[in-house]
Image (tube, rainbow, N blue to C red; front, side, top):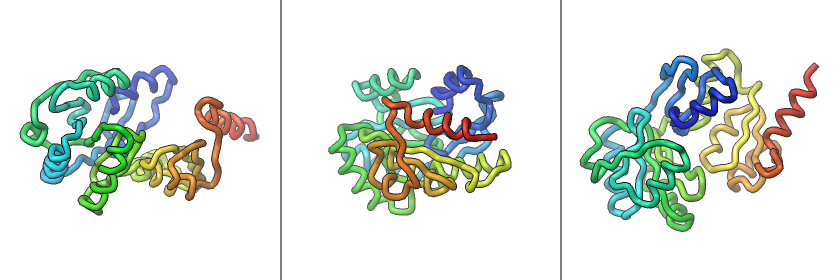
Length: 222
């Protein structure tokens, strides 16, 4: 969410466009202006919500940079606490939703999410972007959305091309980003799909792998 990432951007002094919501939204941190927004078509979102309801799985629904759920349960509390954001309960989401949502996320244990991912990739093949981020999150977005498409927009907006970009990733939802970038780096223990396509693998978070690569790159510049 833009609202959840914005405080970190302010702390880091970053005012370049930021890609949010799996690539569905690109915003200007300095002004708050939304530069790109590609939500899920309403009818398709309702179909997905009905399918999730039939599965009995908790779903986060994002509309207008706000988080909505059917009920505030343990999953909702954990997610809202992790992201430091408010959450609003609205009852059955399929009945409540009346405008295209930016993204839908199902939350569950790893086995449950793995099973749902396989089923939803078949059910919504080419109609929705379907991928896991963390193993407990199944992300649904417009079929025109990915981190790669979000970064392609930013590159065009700022005036650089993919060949000059380095991308890091660890989750299945980073595949399109690494495919887009001129040089793709998988973080240690990344999703197998990333490991297969990455140009290189860097150490994990406990060894500050991403920071080490960036520092080495900057140190190598004239």
